Image 1 (cartoon, rainbow, N blue to C red):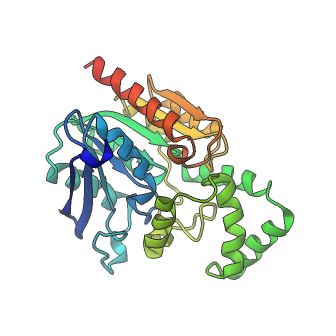
Image 2: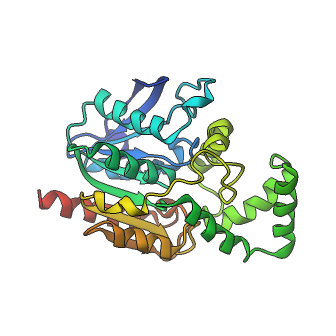
Length: 295
């Protein structure tokens, strides 16, 4: 089936440069997918191509990473810039009605986009492992770090205190956290490996910081909990039981978005679309069917 799907790729103009996009499948109400990071690439969310048998599924590498342009202007790496980029992609692809999916940072970006634009074209919102507050995300990560072996914690704390966060010893210790809470699949899926290989350290460190749990960048104070009520489209909040984002955080997002649904994948961490792929796709298709059935 995958071999017969219509695939299109190309470049789109956005503020600050051009982004690379890939479209899989056709027909239906399209699904626009926003990857995380910031500074990762679309590759790790490529299981969502499975949804292309019913609809057009669109991915793009956000500016600064992957196959998109990589401008040197670090003033671009802000939440407002990436919100403008979503709208530019929507306009360039002429998406008059679409579902919006965001993984991790992609979900944060989706929420901010909806709050800033209230776009009539968005039919529904789907998020996976996405926080509504970076300070609260960090609090949750601190709890998870405290559960790591003491020697691993010591390596992380020592290297961060000294600023040696590119050191192999530090990266090895961080990988223990990632294998528990980012992706528990062994070996890691090729798309996730490729996202790490092609990510932009500049975008990631400018926006976020040296690691998932040490957030020192521009969006360290980002928090939209008090605005969740502005999201009025049907919303599906998902995450993994072992996710970097704690289940209580996801539950409070669900409570804050009127009429939203919450699904926790019991055998997953931050990438349930890899770790429980078939169940994840079935859950998404069921949600999209219900949303479209009510239109």
